[in-house]
Amino acid sequence: MPQPRHPSLRETAAFGGALFGRPAGWLRAIHFAAVAMVTALSPSAYDREARRVAARQIHFSAWQAVPGFTLACALLSFVLIRIVVGTAQNYGLPQYALELTVRVLVLELIPILAALFVALRSGAAISIAVTLMHVRGEFDQLARAGRDPVGGELVPRAIGSLVAVMLLSYSSGVVALALAYGELYGLSPWALGTFVRVTGQVFEPAVVVGFVLKTMLFGAAVGAIPIGAALGIRRDPAQAPIAVRRGMVRLGVALALIEIVFLAVMYA
Image (tube, rainbow, N blue to C red):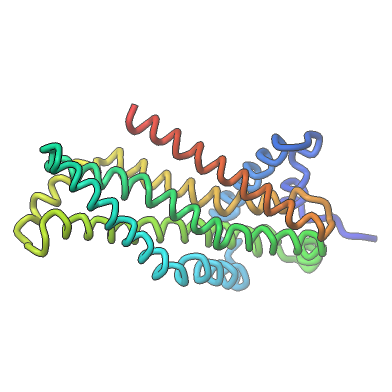
């Protein structure tokens, strides 16, 4: 007699099953994100295999990508900082150059670039891997073997994407701040007090909380939406490209919505 599928996977794959099309896909992704959050907060979910999967995902999505992404962001930041500083000086507003640079680069541009980078580097790969596991019935095999497929295979991948987005955002933000200081004040240490004062005015407690929350939502979206799309297809290998396409489109829309909401809240 065949064993029933694991309840969490069955609910995630069937959630919105009465619906079809895009609404069901969004609901499935949201449902998986909720299941992943609850599972991630459960210490019993972190067995040796789950930690191994999470470490491998973090190594691939974040650690291997740090040098290349940081270098690309440094080049982009250098160009934008030169443009902002030069424009501010031409209009006689050099005192606003640093604040504008921090707000545009560190708070807005770099986090969305980090999310897109992780999505393109890891999101599609995660979607294909989960799709093939779903098609081959590997999740059912894990459930019959007594392992939780959500906590052992899916949640670690989502956590890896979350950590990658946050790590790339924060490390590249620090590099952008260093470049801004060098462009505005050179190598002189005497302007450090002014630099700290201006950046401190930008990074108010509410702004810091919003910045951390936004990067966390970016990371959660990058991890959850491709997996939700992969779990929603039929068990047919030909459906793998469809799952990737749906996941990437929904992810792009989700990232845009998150950014728009935070822009409206922060600068309304």
